[in-house]
Image 1 (cartoon, rainbow, N blue to C red):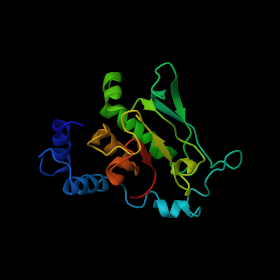
Image 2: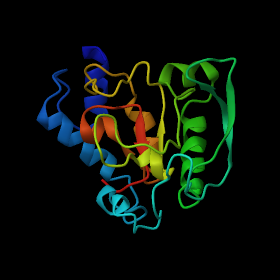
Image 3: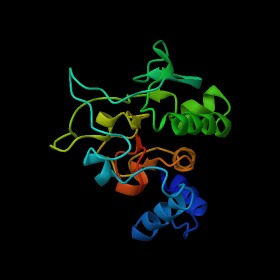
Image 4: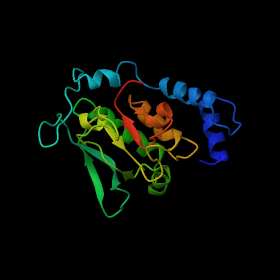
Length: 200
C-alpha cells in the first residue's frame, strides 16, 4: 500500500494516521480485529495442530481427508486469478463451513460490484484444502485441516509485509474476523492472502 492507503487503514483502526506503519499500528490492527472476533468460536492453532481439536486430524496426501461440506458462494471466484476458471462452490471443514459462507456473504455486501471485488482482491482464489506441511517447515499447515483459504496471492505474497508491501484491505479482514477467522496479514504481518478458522 502507498502512504495514503496506509493512513486510511490507520484511521480505520483508531491509531495516528501518520503513514508510518510501526508497532503501534500493528498492535492497533490486531486489537481492531480481535474486537470483532467471536470469543471461543474456533480453537487456537496450537490446539488444532494437536489433532485433538473439534477439527480432528489433518489430512494426508492420498489418505484421510477432514470432513468437508460444500457451500455455494454468493459470487464466483477466479481460480488463480483467471476469470475463465470460475469457482462457485467451496468445501471447507464441516465445522467452519457456515462461518466461511457468512464471511463471503459479508464480502458480497461490503463489495457489491464485480469491480469493487476485483479491486479488493476477493475474486482471486488460490486454494483451501491442501494436505501439506507449512512451506519451508515440518508442522502441518492449516490448509491440511480444511480450515484456511488464500485470496489474491499475486498481491499478497507469503513473505511480503502487510500493509507496506501487500494490498489486502482491512475491510476484507474485518469480514473474516466477524466470523472468527484470523487474518494472517494483521496478526503475522505477512501472508496477507491467508485466512484461517483459528483463534488469535
